[in-house]
Length: 455
Image 1: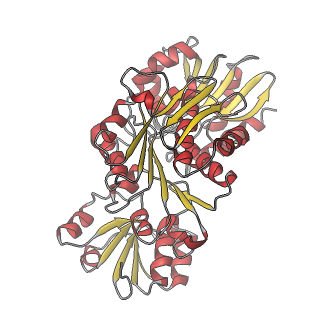
Image 2: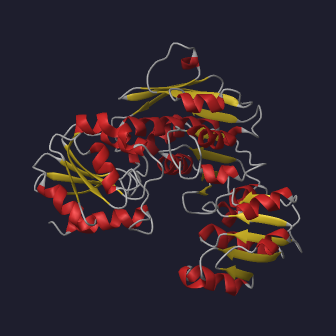
């Protein structure tokens, strides 16, 4: 791909946008970076872009700039369907994303992980398995480390593990992972996609360029996932949460609470024991199965996989134990930004739960939580933009009703007051954080601080 002298417009100046601009500048492209935000809202990103010597257009996207481009590269947070980009495509200007650009220059096999929930845990666990096996691996993508950062340095690597979002797949055209993992599909980002079918189709783009020498690793119990992987041209390996009767158990993984049985003819056959892992819940057993299958396809032995599983710790903001105060356990699941993630979290607890929910709704029907809240939640505390909607939908489901908090500190205090020794206070919002926080991590940190103030 020839970039020298080309007029390239980068749309969206955040971490990935800045990395793309730096790469393009090194390739002697004529780079313009445009963002809807004004310079004061972009902080150090704008300062660093100016040091690169690229041209900045902030406070909006100029149609004439996009129309004059040879190539447009957009950041994941920028909807690929906005009018200026649609017009550029109609004029024959290529519009791609950072992942697509990076993949065209990375020469090492990519193991890509996608799905609505569990992407980050599975990506990190897979990276750990490969590292324990002695492989040099870069773990990046939607996980926070742009793939473009390793272009030109990938000769020292054996493999690349990438968390891939639906937004990144929307702008992929030639992206071809050697191993593609699709964990699950449930309603998410319906503020950006007009239906669950369109969202699922975006996830399915993970497989579109794979061939017979590649692997597709899919959730055999998820109908939406199976709908996307049914016609893959790569070798399909399914993982199942229970034995099935459709013949799929002959190739892939069967999950039980105590172990994962894996059979991949001509690749591997064995078991992963789960007695020592700290990753709790049925969803994490699926994550372990998917990561194990992916690792096996690239030559990792069962011994290394088992060692990685035994030593892996839960990630921050993902069912993360924070503290126990006078017998009440506090768990931070701030990364649970959709309804299905909350269901998966609630399934992990036998003890009574006081649940903190709320934030910015991404188009969900909170009524899908009604049965789970009724069965497992004793008290519900809501906050943020969607607090009233959640209260109206779920307020009568918990045994002890629901209440509204002003902010995170107030929510933690109210949840603690409604708890007794042996209970769990769970932050699992089912919403984006952008009404009150910069991101889910900042929200989780606020939860941690508020819990610390109780001690």
